[in-house]
Length: 85
Image (cartoon, rainbow, N blue to C red):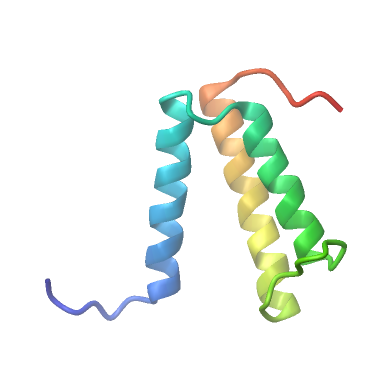
């Protein structure tokens, strides 16, 4: 493997996004699971969780935005039932 000049955080994000999509595609995750993940990240990003994200507020809000975008993409692409509220 050759060293990469890209941001390791971005590489991790690509891997995690791909993993979530694959898990949803294989029906290991439901649409409700993806929506719950989005809500949990939202609570942690806004400090409403007992386990807040250990990063800057800017990074936490960015994580929330990315999670919402990913959730929207996965739910449109793979469909499924919404979480019961």
